[in-house]
Every structure is written in C-alpha cells, then in structure tokens.
Length: 242
Picture 1 (tube, rainbow, N blue to C red):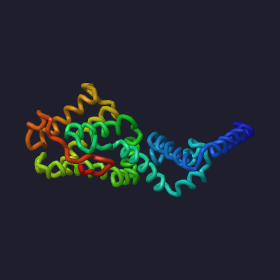
Picture 2 (picture 1 turned 180 degrees about the vertical axis):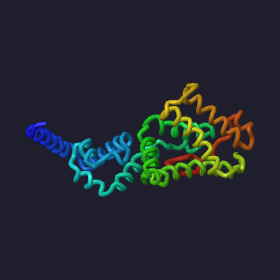
Picture 3 (picture 1 turned 180 degrees about the horizontal axis):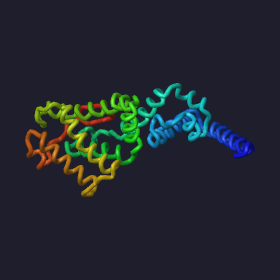
Picture 4 (picture 1 turned 90 degrees about the vertical axis):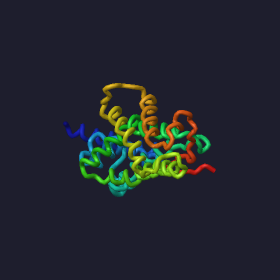
C-alpha cells in the first residue's frame, strides 16, 4: 500500500470519528460502545478483541472508549447491567398480581426461552467468559441470575406456605424448573439441536404441566384450574397480593 493511500485511509477514519462525535450524545455514544462490545466479544472472545477494534467499530478514538469506561471491568459491568435490565423489563407480574400457577410458570418459561432465542450474544459471551476465565460470567450470576432465582424461589416459597405446593426446598424447585426450560431452549436456539421440533408454547405447556404435577399438594387443582397464585413475580422480586 502506498503512503498516500495510508494517509487517505487515516483521514477518512478521522472524518468518521468526527462525524460520529457530532451525531451522538454522550449517553448514545456510551450505549453504542456497549452494543459493539457485546457483538465483538461474542464473535471473537475477550482476549481476541482489542480496544482499537472496539473504537473502530463504534467510530470513535480509543481515548473516547476510556472516557466512558476506565477499565474493562467497568465495561463488563455495563454489559451485564444492560442485559439484566432487558430481562427485568420483561419480568412482568401476572395481571392484577394474581394468576394461576400455570400462567405464572408459563410466563417464566417464555421469558427464559426468549433469553436464548431472541439474543444469542449473551450466551456466547458467558461461554467465552467461562472458557477464558473472564470475570464477566461471575458478575452475571451475581447481579442477574441470583436475583432471578430468588424471584422464582420466592414465588414457590409463598405457595408452599399457602399449602398449595409440597414442602420441598424452594431453591431446589426453582432450579429444577429453570434448568428444564433453559437446557431445552439453549439446545434448540443456540446449538440448533431439536430432534423432534414442536411449537414453543406446546413444549412449555407440557413442561409446566409436568412440573406442577410434581409439586402440587393436590393434583386435582391442576384439573380444575382452581390453584391461584397468591403472589406475582415482578422485576426479580416478589410482590404479595394486596
């Protein structure tokens, strides 16, 4: 490549950076960095992605990256916060804070499934993080997964106290349901392994039915649909019915 070509490319890059700075506000630029970081990390891993590549993808200079995120840990935290907020926004409570257990667990099942189906980047990020010994996966489970588990086990604990569910450890039951749905959704959506394809809602219906038949004190409740939850699940926390 000729020297003139190199200078021309640098001039073009400089113009792009300037144009980007003029177009985006500080908050918009910060979000753009997070989005591109998620994409690059999920494609190339944490060790294979450089700050220079990230800056080029966003259309800013490297110092701008450091203005928003002084360390990689700050950037990892922002990624986790971004993904956790997306999930939190979707974790809506049942209508009027009261619904049947079928509806409550079908709602949770869809949320878990969408986590893998709608955006596979976070799964790839967590795999890279675990394989490379990166701290992002630890941050994810501390900030997001633990809260989600607490929400589900809290609902189950409330139903046990009401006498509707069998007296089994709530966390174990929560892990059982989450793991069942998550494993299937990951196999289908991430690994493309689905030897017997079926509609998602049909699969979830059977999973919820199987789970509730194992935990309900009176299985007849499942037939007549009279088992109404006494608590809603909202944004990672339990909200008791007024």
